[in-house]
Length: 345
Length: 285
Ligand SMILES: Cc1ncc(C[n+]2csc(CCOP(=O)(O)OP(=O)(O)O)c2C)c(N)n1
Ligand SMILES: [Mg+2]
Image 1: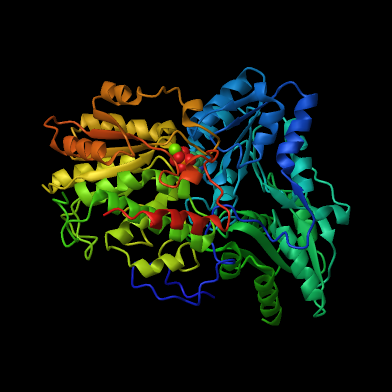
Image 2: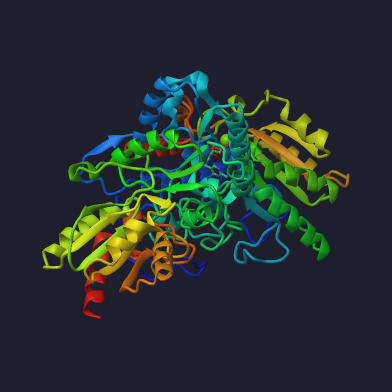
């Protein structure tokens, strides 16, 4: 753990000699793509292809098309792209207006700005009327070291609270591409988290295919069941591999659709064979997947050993993303060590 | 000059201050190999006049209640404000080496909890002017004669919240509020004038129509800035004041000035030293 002196105005005491390469609180940070194959701008390319077949698709951004990969679509279909300026409330209202006229708008910004600033505009102009606006947002959870202004640590909690809204947290490039198609085909409003730029591609090798509203088993295991969403499924798969070397057998249930939750699959898997259930999400422990699963278990009267991996209910530090993932428990190492401790309890 | 500054070396020219701000910012960029250097170089002259001509503050006591407040809305401009705070003696120069590092007091995006002299947490754009309205009301309530300055960007003129504050400041007759708009004609996706229906030279008229005392100046002309800040402070009317500063990104480093303008200007690894050498070749008195 990093001693938390950083959020103080006290005298600066360096923690260690500066390491120019590793430590940066820059806005754009990549997810550990090292050694993994990646695909460039999966959302932008998927939407571009889709728009070739569907005349009703339009794209809007609030001065963040380049940073949400929507620029790929904008370059391919310039007459169907609307630059709304840095005005997130307007972005959502205008998307609602386009939807009322029969179009299927994909609106992009960062997750913080859609969920925090534009909430009421999404809620009343879009969700209350179940308009088919697809809100696709980059920088979900802790995917930037830039500090709380850009860390959407509670977006799932905020969006889960909105009636009518489907909420999706895809894991990798292929899933983002498949989900882009799927949300265009579903009638109502959707909030989808995006990974942008070079996005790791991992689920393909397990023969996985995204289906809206479905949780799916990626690997089976007998001691621990990870129930994970978003890029944390990459991490739980890596943690499962590491734990296997210590003879701990872990299964991974991937839950990309947070709402509506695939309660049936979650309950069936969680009650199978006395496994320790560990939810894992790139989100605050408050109001995300973990609490959704816990509530489903309690409501059904299923009492299983349950632990939660997620971000603390705090405004997080700025810093290098790998540092922060270690500090706040999203790294593979920290998952592995906590699971071991929990199994010993 | 430097009429309001307490405990800061007098007799240093504004040219020299602006040069030092640019130099500090380039050194921070060099530490990380990145940073919003185009913005920092562009706004250096505005910051020099703000901190070394207009503002009253005590470098050793950044929370002194008599200070003029300086609210930076634009979190990503932190590199520029750190550079000015170092030149002002609020932050020590040797912390340049920590810029953007884990546990640094100078993270890439400006936040109040981290840095002396960083009054508000920026980054989520469109907050600053509203907070400044509240501070202006609070100062009046306390009969504190200080000014509150808010430095905001042209991109922030797209946010509705900015215009809510624009109208409120007039309603409350906030003659202690001075907005400084860095109009560099740049946003994340491209030129500001391609996103907001604004022509060069028309921005002041818009603010005037809302009831502000508005001036539009060349934000890289120190003398013009001094006159504008003096006029903003001295204006007799019970209205808020705005100085729209047309700035050029990368100003002061010719090989960057001519580079294609983007929100995040790429600088190659060897170019930081090249830029610093360019500055060091001609040190203003
Ligand atoms: C509310 C909000 N929306 C979007 C962003 C993402 N963003 C960061 S900087 C920026 C451009 C804003 O324009 P400006 O400040 O004029 O940019 P610059 O001159 O530095 O290029 C955007 C859209 C943000 N930080 N806050
Ligand atoms: Mg700008």
